[in-house]
Length: 166
Image (cartoon, rainbow, N blue to C red; front, side, top):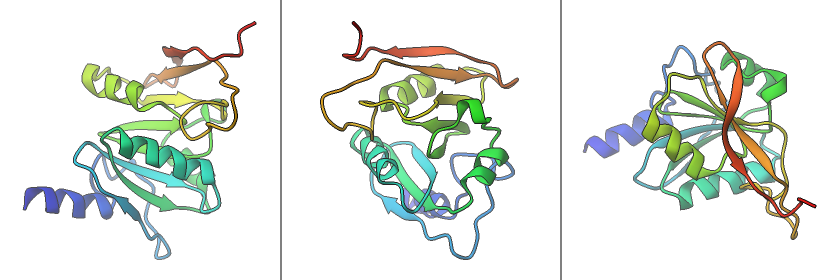
């Protein structure tokens, strides 16, 4: 019963974040709910973005419950959650009060949730090849997962080594 109520609240966008920080749902918002039993990831993405759906699948495969909203106003979503253009990627999630921007690996999110630093969240700016959701071909770029402090300052949280070193 409690799990059902929690999932229902997640579908309404009430779980995993302070609702005053979450983008307001609109009448055309129709969530796509993927099932799992782990933390709820409320994901905002463009309806035409395929890599966002692949990242959602990556989260689900790693134990997260994904509630995805297709939005045509992603810049407004990012602005409402404090994601600056320097930190931006294609999709934005809220997981247990943290903002997760872009193709952040599930392992980094799990570490964030274990350590619970006083921070805004994580970001992988841009769309590095080989990151979760961007696995096309054999190229895997090295990239940093950034921890974004409450002041907006970013520091390296994880470094993901690719095969592009040379």
